[in-house]
Amino acid sequence: MDKKSRAEALIAQEKAALEAWNQGNPSGYLEIYDRDITYFDPYHEKRIDGIERMQALYESLRGQVRVDAYEMIDARVEVSEEMAVLTYNLVSFSPGEVMRWNCTEVYRRGDRGAWKIIHNHWSLIPPPSK
Amino acid sequence: MDKKSRAEALIAQEKAALEAWNQGNPSGYLEIYDRDITYFDPYHEKRIDGIERMQALYESLRGQVRVDAYEMIDARVEVSEEMAVLTYNLVSFSPGEVMRWNCTEVYRRGDRGAWKIIHNHWSLIPPPSK
Image (cartoon, rainbow over all chains, first blue to last red; front, side, top):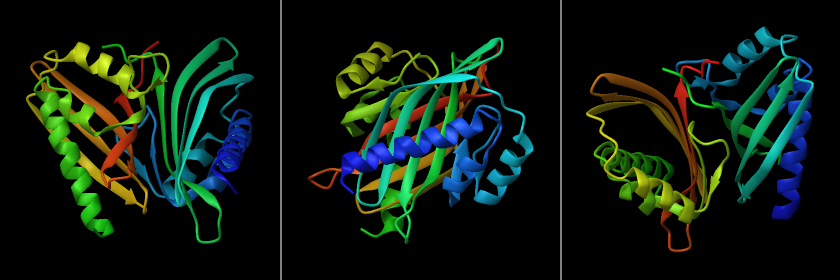
C-alpha cells in the first residue's frame, strides 16, 4: 500500500472508531489500540499506559457518550515504513453542548501488518480557566 | 545508534530545548522543529502548520516566559528506523503558578540523519472550565 492509500486507510479506520465512540461504544478504539498504548486526555493527571488500563477506562464509559454529529477538520497523516501520525481538529455536537478537540494518534505497523495506535492524545479547546 | 541511545538522545535534546524555553528563549525548539511541523496547544482553535507560522508564534513569545523549575515525569520514547514519539508529563513552576502539561512530540529522521519534530501537542491539566 502506498503512502496516500495508507493515509486514507488510517483516516477511514479512525472515522469508524470515532462513530462507534459517539454512540457509546468504545470497542472500535480498543480494537485498534496497541497493547503498548500510551494515552493523554484532559481528565487524568498523568499519562495512562497499557491496554489493560485503557480497557478499564473505556469500559467504564461504555454507554455514557452520545454525540449526534461531528466534524473532522484538516485530518493530516505522516507515514513512514513502520510508523504514522494522524492529527486533526474535532468538533463534537451533543444535545446542548459543542466540544472542540485537538487529536493526535501515533500508529505502529505490527508484525502481521496491522497498524495499531501506540499513542493517543486528546485535548480540549479553549484552555482551562484559572 | 541503537534504540536506547536514540531515546536518550531525544530526551536530552528535549530537555535542552525546554530549559531554553523556560528562560524565554524559543530558539531551542525552533531549531529542532521540522519545516513540516504541525502543532497543537491549548491557546489556539486550530492546528498550526508549518515552520513559518511556528516561528511567528514563538518569536512573539520571546522573553515572555519565565519558568524557574520543572519536572519531566515518566518520559517515554518509541523509536523506529524513521520516526519516534516522545511523551511525558511536565510540571512547570513559575512565581505564583504551577502548570501541569501533557506533552507529545513526534520525530522524523531527516535526510542528513538529524531527528526533527514533525508534530508537537501540548495540553493543560486539568480540563477547561466551561
